[in-house]
Amino acid sequence: MARRRRGRSSNGQQQQNPQNRRGGHRMALREPAPFAKPTGCEAVVPHDVVTISQARKGTPAHRPVRVYADGIFDLFHSGHARALMQAKNVFPNTHLIVGVCSDELTHKFKGYTVMTEDERYEALRHCRYVDEVVRDAPWSLTPEFLKKHKIDFVAHDDIPYTSAGSEDVYKHIKEAGMFVATQRTEGISTSDLITRIVRDYDIYVRRNLQRGYTARELNVGFINENKYRLQNQVDKMKETVRTVEEKSKHFVNRVEEKSQDLILKWEEKSREFIGSFLELFGKDGAWHAIQERSGRMLQALSPYSSPRGSPSSSPTRTRSVSPKDLLHAASPPSSPSSPSSSSSRKKKARASLKAASH
Image (cartoon, rainbow, N blue to C red):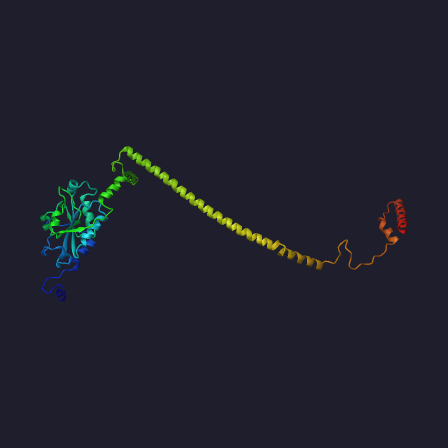
């Protein structure tokens, strides 16, 4: 009972969920927008005429304001989405209905499309701002169509839309006070996208040939197909050469960096080696100190002897040479081989004695 009382107002009418009052906003964010029924809007809530000022104040409170926006929506892009966003937010509580014209009407009054009508229908169904999609929408809005779908206002940009022999197909909507203006997004449109493709036709044909499309699918002749394939091969060779150049430059730079590092390290090591060499073998180096110490140790271990040719500090007495010593020094060792040789030696000894005596 408490739930029933909470769900009903004081006059016994059931209160609506705020999400339902916002035109199925929850469903539009989680699921694709539904298609409009062929019979039109079958809402039980009475549909009263609403002015723009009333709608902007949030009235009527028992239902959302039904806003209609139509178009071709070929190659659905951000400009389309921004226009629908403006139409959705033109009033506090809006139910956005989007009408999409069929291929027959579009080809007749505007021109050929890139996407088919079914593809365009599905693109609009998956836009987050759209609550309902009307297929095969009329080119010019009639009172019967507005009444059938219970449309309160029509949203479009304010620029006069000249088509189907009319200066402005929304003129009668504006005169009836049912028109709300949206702003166009500059820099992007379906015509701009097609112009880019036509301008860079060769690039996109070569791109699709690389991705596996056949020349027949692309409606390209035999000569142009071979020309595009040759251009692709040339571009591949250029890319290969460019890649090799970049790699070689990178390799040369790495070699230069490493060579500089090696030179710096070699200079540092050479300075260290020269410094250590000078410390070891220099004038005041450790090697001379070791030599001096070793010399002192050798002098301490060996007997003292004065150098030759230098006067002795403490002269020593020398014994005089006797004739007998001279005879003994001059005489060679005796050999018992011949007596004549001994006599000759005796003679020589006597001669040397005479010379010594003189």
